[in-house]
Length: 317
Image (tube, rainbow, N blue to C red; front, side, top):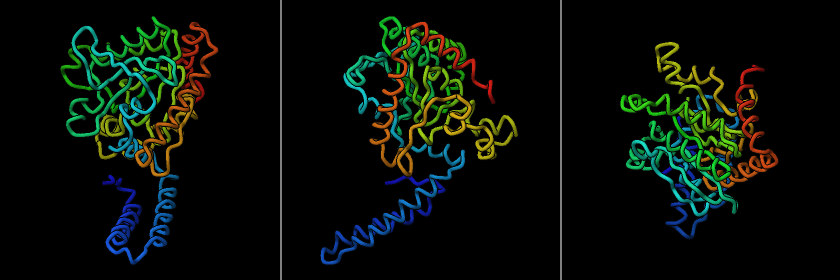
């Protein structure tokens, strides 16, 4: 069953009519509704084009959080071969909110890692909705150091509302773990490409996205804090989240203008959740393109250019 967002009411009504006609066609083989179905499907497509062609930042936030958007596991299954998961931070435990390991990407060895939100209720609980604890960021840092040692390109896939803010996480050094992981990102001497597929929230996202090249899906977001948190901080009122989203410049279109990201991947009409496979395949092509652009740089140049990229953020705003 399709999960419709609040601004997709007209699309929901049209698709309901399409489904009703398809059921009638199946029940009565003597009556054909094919022309009616085609007409309604065309109207649905046009309605989606109109809606998704003028989404507000708050609406994009809702699309980025859509439960049916493809997740990290979907990308791993489609784009990567021979994936071998590497677990644990060698200090405390294994955090399932971040999954990472060795894999083949277009027949070349890489280190791939990212946030996994989960798809079912049990899965979301297991992966803590993609909100990583210190162990997750220490694991990510450990994997990056392995990649650096063996000169393997690193691909990170970001989809998190932010790092887990629980008391236990803070007691085990959440801020230090995020800072350390970010430092490792900036210091590795191999190509590092990051793909933001849904939410890129706060330091929890930056810790994996301090890359040579940062790519975003068209309707993903990348923000210093969630719109709800920002509204609570600035106006003591989380109900002003839509206003916060509209003023924070969190969309891919805003961020490429500011030089924060390098590339935007177009999503299918209606969002990535309407055609996950195409979204993933297109993402794979863009990842390969960005890795190719980094192929001529030596290890020192990779590190220096990455640091310069982040030092330059905000200079021209």
